[in-house]
Image (cartoon, rainbow, N blue to C red):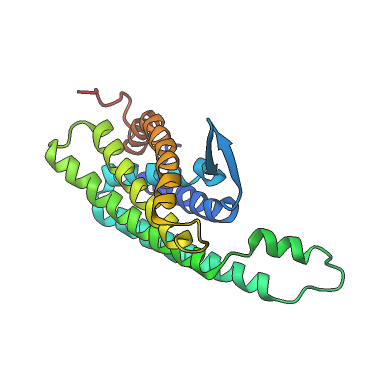
Length: 216
């Protein structure tokens, strides 16, 4: 039996929330990819922008905004639960509390930065996507997908680094924050460009189209 658009939307919304929660739970770890030090959230966080672009293309601004609001609420809820879990005293039979705190314990500053930057970047992504859709008269999905995501990722990357780390130590000057933001953002740009075919496929799947939109 064919899936209705409502069921497809529910699946995308679930993927969106899962990617967002995963990015915030696993993102403390950094790795080196192509010589650039990045958070491992680089594999999950961009999915949120891909999903919002698909939803924006098919359903429009209002439903996409509702999805982002649900994402912010989910993020706040998960982070509050995480803070509570870290704060509760451990049972005697749980010998891993210090490791648990090391993994899941985040400073208030980082938590605030995460929520603010997610809300700001996703809001910009919705605005930019529809701005470019209007400018291109509904054509060039690849263009609005990439321009909206790349700009939003720049806002997210710089704002997070600045709010979370500027002045946290003597070496965390504005210049240093910019120097570590640019290569991180360039990796995100590459990821955004790579997800363009998935944006087309997602839109086709949502609409039940048999053939893709021709690339102008």
